[in-house]
Amino acid sequence: MAFLRAIAWLLLLIAVISLTSDLTRGNGSASALLTTTLSHWKDVSPGSLAATAAFVRDTISPKALDPVLVRVLLLPAWALFGSLGVALALLGRRKLYADGQWKDAPVYDRVKLPIGARVVGPAIIQQNSITWK
Image (cartoon, rainbow, N blue to C red; front, side, top):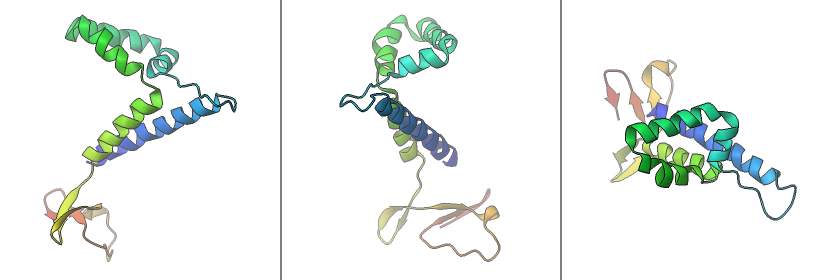
């Protein structure tokens, strides 16, 4: 769960940076220049883009490359990374049932809590072998 949340934050950071870049390149004009994910990928690592295209074409299907992958890569980079970040953040959250309803709950690693630490609940305190709620 923590891994998913960390990846989500990284993707959301990339989305914010990409959106900021797109908005500031407009030089104050009313219309912003929205850079596609494909354009960013071509600029950053054209070799990996070609390798990914060959992998999809040869392993999955040639039809998956053009109508599916290319359409996804034509999305603005901030929209693609932001959407993936939100999806992973939602997958990585923890819920518990308390006071008659499901609630988001912070998760604490018991081993990392200092001696005498107080935790405001409801919360999940987890350990490798046990989870207390």
